[in-house]
Length: 239
Image (cartoon, rainbow, N blue to C red; front, top):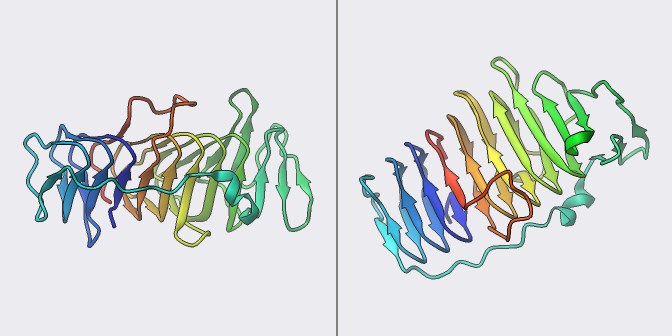
């Protein structure tokens, strides 16, 4: 029932707004507030809340609340929902037809493979099919001002990073981004994310954007280092 839920500790910097009927944060560790976030409901920690000078939400800053069990974040469990598999060999499997598309040094509907980083990169100027994309590796998505919203869910075995003025709507019901590692979520004013965003490891948010959905970090032991030292929310996003 929280917009932000972390199986560990979380740091809030800047002035993010966590709004709506589920405008609360829950940590199965501590909550540290270094800025002035706004919570429309409450901020709750199994450990302690270091609220600093943040305004007290209607439901308060609450410490010692019960631990909330979180589901496993397992990208492989969702592979069967994929319409396209972005493979680690640089090919793209069209699941329906069985055809493997080979973009080579070019791109396919905005998707391009960076073999050195085992990373599939999407540029918002591309026009991908409305679909669920399963990534055998990392995914990096970027957008520019004026790019239209894209309808696609991204499930990555490793990490996901977003930048720029990207606008994403999900294909999988209520599920937008799932990562087996970390998620670094960035955006400029006007960027939007709709749906569940979940990482097996940590999440770091940056920039100014609007996210309607749940942000979930399972906080499993570090395998990847896109995000380290716990999850954090910076600085002016709206949830």
